[in-house]
Length: 517
Image 1 (spheres, rainbow, N blue to C red):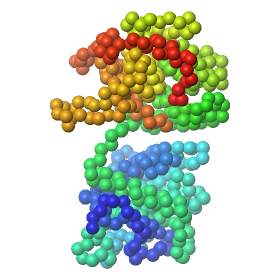
Image 2: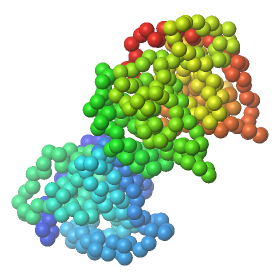
Image 3: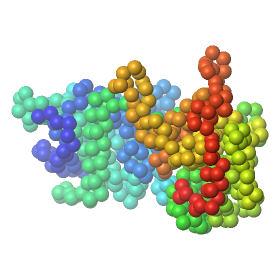
Image 4: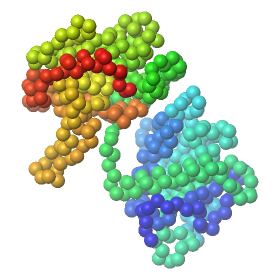
């Protein structure tokens, strides 16, 4: 029976744990009745997992591809990896001799369809080392297999935490009847083997962690293969604006430099692990973005300045200033965290209430002798940051300066809490309406406001520890034939219900406890 449900079982074919030289090939799990038509669906899914090992383990940040036989310019594998090329040949010979690729009583010769060498980069490089690994796509008439072979791993003790303590992993998809099946059977099976370090010929009981890992690896392979076969399309795309490798390398460098100290000296009641690592990631993104887009002819640090609107605990401002960028942060309430920063950073954190000049022009009265105000007029060369800036989120695209907005809580221009419409018309019929979440509706509203103001809107789903990770960026203005209609800020304020009551609401924030985000 053909089944797409996930129901793995221990190995049932007559294949004992097999002794090869000083090591063992151990059959662990199999999923029966899975049919990927054509077999390339399995291969496409597995290639995606090869390029993105972080799907299988949160301890892995990424994989850098060092060699790919399908890509020109990577050189000759044998000359670059001479020692390991011989080991690959030896291990494939083991699998052939053991009959793992045998069916209908015929021993099938296996060919390498594709060879990839990757370097796995762990998320915590202070605890785990980098590891090189060969990933081979093996093919014969009856099956398609993926063989994972780590380089330089000679014992369980030398294995990084994020990799099973084995010297090889085989994911084996049998696309034709097994050698023990009755004629005409359509049983097709996905199997997982471990190559163990142990030289014992006795029956092996796998440690619990190896069993759990096998279940995860086989389950992910099965799920993703079905996804490819059923036409799954990824809905969320990361690394559109900033390259993943440059961002992650910058993030690791900043984390090593600042994280331990910030967490140790944290004085707020909120969780430092969330706020510190989130702001480190945002800082890494901004620095890579600015260096790529502002550094034509000179350094980004010399070409722009930043303003963090609603800077909260000030960590983002602290990191950027310590890294040599010029700017400041403003917030309606001073935070205890500000006191732990050096004096020159504290001088760049301002306790001010931002009431945009556009709001005042809309006949909104501002008057309070006890509160310092900022009118929202920023000099040329300013880049505005709205990181969970709440009441100010819909205002930032209206202020006429390049910006990034990371929306969080939904507010109208009046400062009142407001839920934007969650339906988007995609056509003329009711069935052509897309239903959005409240958060997605807020993000779409901010993007529409920026577009209507003439910004060429860019989007990024940030790699931060938060579900509110959508970033809307406006750096350049639309022009020429692609400009379309461009609204004035006053027209947008009028269209979106006006700004009456905004100043009263933001002044009231000065007497309330800060929000946890």
